[in-house]
Length: 328
Image 1 (cartoon, one colour):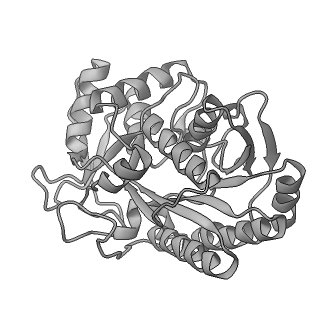
Image 2 (tube, rainbow, N blue to C red):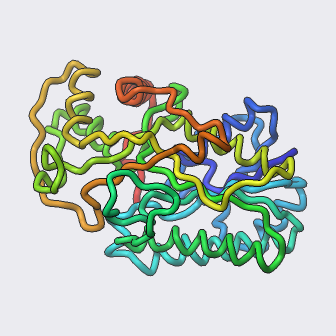
């Protein structure tokens, strides 16, 4: 069986490609390398350099490589930046998903795992969100992901699409030393690049209504996330029923300041972070229950915060790229 992974040259996507290969499934990667790296795609994996907005190219690739299912990660993922670039965000995330679904329909592919986000919840009024928590996105990015879920639902009604959407939270760490997060906006690479360049890491906002004033997030290791995608795709391929949406969260919140402390411990670089202004679109706290995913996908947190930080730091030591190489 062959699985198409859109965005498979990115940090998360490339981990998912490796997880599928370990599970014995062939992969086809479609990525325009706007934020991914060709070097992240393993040797032996077919790579198509294309944006998913090119419906004809994607459909042709699906037919030529006899694709059985899709894992859709490609898109513009920067919530804060999406506030100032809403049209680009909707083009890549909404029109791109429409284009992909059209390619699937034309090619007779009817199974998809959609990469959604905790951003669909905005700032929830509960301590721990579940799949039943009301959605109220606060950024174009979050809105685009919610529209993506609606597209999955409506396509299922129209042409029997089999789908599930995985809403995941802050994905961090590295499973292998040659992959790491090169985002210029995510917390871990921002901290690590600052330390490597001799700068003091910065906290964006320390006046949130949280115990230490910094944002509280649900951090999950990228290896655990990748495994969940494999299980979800395998269940769809075997015709097993899945819920339309799953949260992939730990149930525990960790503040940005606590992450800073964990980085200092892991790297041996003692520092007091600088305090900057809040970023637009950042909710104060968002933590999720992963109970439903544990029931259906075998979801579990196999890595501690120390594991997450340590693996991210170790991978960055041996990798040639830096976050500055990626242009949002």
